[in-house]
Amino acid sequence: MKKILISLFLLPLAVLGQSNLHEPIDRKASAIETKVIEWRRDFHQYPELGNKEFRTAKIVADHLRALGMEVTENVAVTGVVGVLQGGKTGPMVALRADMDALPVSERNNLTFRSLNTSTYNGQETGVMHACGHDSHVAILMGVAEVLAGMKDQLEGSVKFVFQPAEEGIYEPGVTTFGAKQMVEEGVMSNVDAIFGLHIWAQIEAGKIGYRSGPFMAAVDNLDVTISGTQAHGASPWSGVDPIVTSAQAILGLQTILSRTVNITENPAVVTIGAVHGGIRHNIIPEKVEMIGTIRTFGDEQQALVHRRITDIITKIAESAGAKADVKIGKLYPSTVNPPELTNQMLPSLTAAAGPDNVIAMDPVTGAEDFSFFQREKPGFFIFLGGMKKGGDPLTTPSHHTPDFVIDESGFVLGVRAMSYFVVDYMEMKK
Image (cartoon, rainbow, N blue to C red; front, side):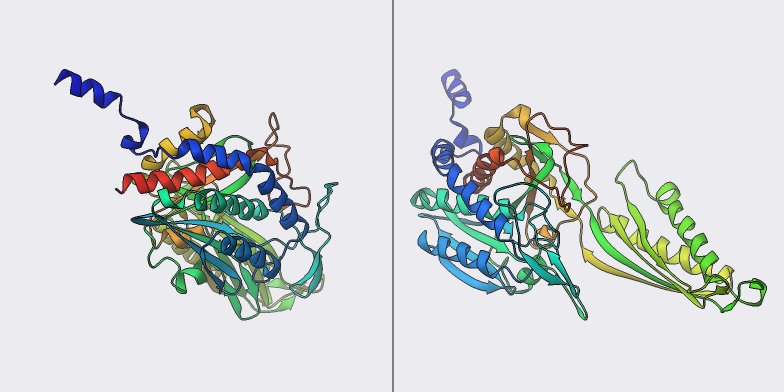
């Protein structure tokens, strides 16, 4: 009996939920690091806006076909899905990368900087991978090549999901998001679990950030119209002033965060981004329009904040004799990493990056439409460090800015981590 107990402690990591394929994955990932960086630079130089990722999608589809996969194109307009059949039966594991760029004019001296332009909301603009989606595509192409090279050893199948329009499509009469549309078209129907990553400019390359539970915020749009009665600015008592009412409503919204939300559990954000009303110095206008953004974590907090926004604005308007029309448009739900799946996959992160390079993060008030996939099946989402070693996260240009830049030395870690997720998850489901 004593010998049996000792032998249990000496079992290989594979028996404890980590695959014995880590070592060959490491070799293959290192061997294609240069190729992954070249792919990323190509995508960076030729970025495409959401649902216009035609060139990117073709490169991806050709690559997956060359690896022997079953490939479906034009999913959710320009998305690509490839399926790698493993040599043994087991779960279907999905991996996701988003492909779209942003209407941002690049401002740096990279030899592969974007010179592309396009039309967005009726305006000519530069186009730039200012959020790092080019690196996501290149990394997942690398993962596809690594795993295809050992497909006979895989105990299940892998679905590679290259998604368009993560940043959303906002056109007159059309609001859509790539992940949501992919879900509606059945991409998740036979998937057991899904994994994704996002390059992060405020985490040092070589490190990985994660969070169990609510990780990234739900994002919703707020549109408000406050209607009063127009009057001469010299006799405000003869009308109902929607400007003063709007000012009071804006201040009232701040009490949601200071007096309603339990900030010890999760933060929330209510921001008014624009206020439009009036045309002349001495005229009190008939109405004021406001727009803003709402960030919350989890369905309960979202419902609470939405209810308080509507109550505060409408009641303040009523008290002034005005009327308020409040519209809240739901965009992305909160990105939530299920605690059970998070705990299961943490050893994979530690094995890939080393225990000192895995960081438990605070909630992030940015949003991600990966959350739509998580609504369908268990999903785990991580941040991959993209800041140069020794950099200052406070001065490093952030995402969605013209000066955004990524340290490519962390890409090989991304390939390893995503590959580990696949083989370790399959090992756990044996």
